Image 1 (cartoon, rainbow, N blue to C red):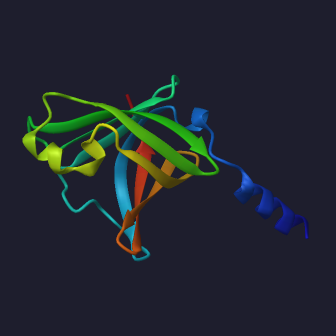
Image 2: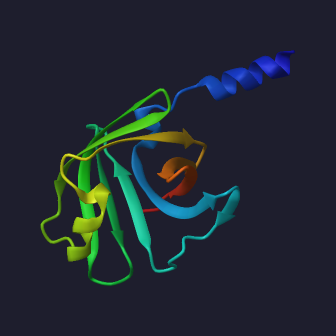
Length: 138
């Protein structure tokens, strides 16, 4: 019985903003229950969470072209709420097609955090694509 109570307590804690602070890089993905490497080995995708409640999302594919945006964020009931307030004016032209690079975009994403890992549950149609982010070394 004690084990069940401990397990229930372990899984009932909410993710706090403080746990997210810092740089997190895409490490792998889970799709249809299978963990896999990102489809493009040249993809560098990174979130940076700041203590003032803002975040930076940046990605490139190993070239000079990149996409970068800034958003306000909060975490409530293990859901990451984001509201994009700025995009880099030097973003590559293709960024305009990415919904996450649109000023005014608001998203709610299920989030889990472990010791050195964040899992973001991204919607992919009716399925779940989970991004696994690892703490970046500076």
